Amino acid sequence: MRIRHALIAGGGIGGLATALALHRQGWTVTVVERAVSLAPVGAGIGLAPNAVRALRELGVADEVRACSASHEGMGIRHPSGRWLVFVDEEKARRRFGEPFAVLHRADLVRILADRLPPETLHLKTRVEGVETGTGERPARVSTSQGDFDADLVVAADGLRSGLRSRLFPAHPGPVHAGFTAWRIVVPAPGCGLLASETWGNSGVVGVLPMAEGRVYCYATGVMPPGKLFEDERAETLRRFGDWHAPIPDLFAAAAPETVLRNDVFHLARPLPSLHRGRVAFLGDAAHPMAPNLGQGACQAIEDAVVLAHVAGDGTDIPRRVYDYTAARLERTTAMVRRSAKVGAMVHRDSPAAVRTRWTLAAVAGRLPFGATARSLRPITGWHPPRLGGEPGTPGR
Image 1 (cartoon, rainbow, N blue to C red):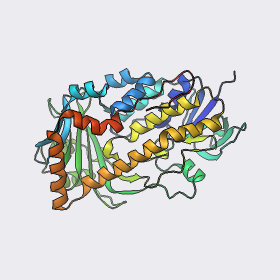
Image 2 (cartoon, rainbow, N blue to C red):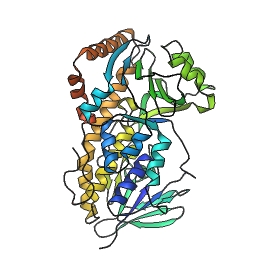
Image 3 (cartoon, helix red, strand yellow):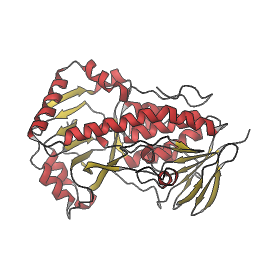
Image 4 (spheres, helix red, strand yellow):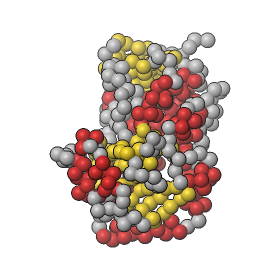
């Protein structure tokens, strides 16, 4: 039987997860990445149980867990430090079946890349054109390093996807979500730090302990797109410097040049489908979303497992990519919309809106844990399809 070939445009988390998933299905995979290396970029990343299950199907969940810190619990806090909601980690793990994992993005990239054959990754390679292929004709991708024929092309080229703009030229693309995000990784200020997200009247701050005595901290605030500050760390201290400990100390501990700042964009109008011919879209190329559910990378990892599952042994790919769209478009669209709704809610800065969200969070914190878990089930309750064997139900 002929070995099928997939070309993946993009060497980020979604692209590498897809490469590993297809490799485990017996495919030959080529990943083209325009960067000169997979050097550590980004900051921390939180993975919910749905993504951890998908990583378990890829055979890397235990390694990811080994790079993650153990948490006693997590919740939502008032800027004064008062807990509005707190969930015991062990109780959450029993309910969801998998832990929440927090690690550095670079560690996740390394784990995924290390499982691939060394000839898989082609760095310093730009995609310059694509013929989508139809029926028995394979797709063809033109790159700065030559042309590739492929039974399947995976567009995992991120928020500003060139393949999305080429193949969906009438689509408006991502729009600004109304706020910006800062991210840092700094040494932990002592022991006993609990994972939390603090909701204030000028934004949100998340504090997520990591392994090896580090903390991933993120913050968001209302900001027009493109507005920059000479010192982004000073801006975070101006906004959040009077919030509860250890938030001011965490931002003060970051070297100014290490503070990452990105305006937040999402796809307010979903793509009409997640494929064109033999080209399938996933991750931020398919459904960029605001970070307020913590599901951006999680959904990309889900995409990867589902796409590899429906691709199977590579026969009849033009039909099977329809199954991929059917399995993923509704779910990812719902995630984009729910993330946008939460993002809008936590960034309303009128006094009435601020009091209302504090009250709603406090009420949720007094409910039995089962009620909270049920509200999260559409997000964290997803289970991946099995890789290997015949394509069947592609995730649930």
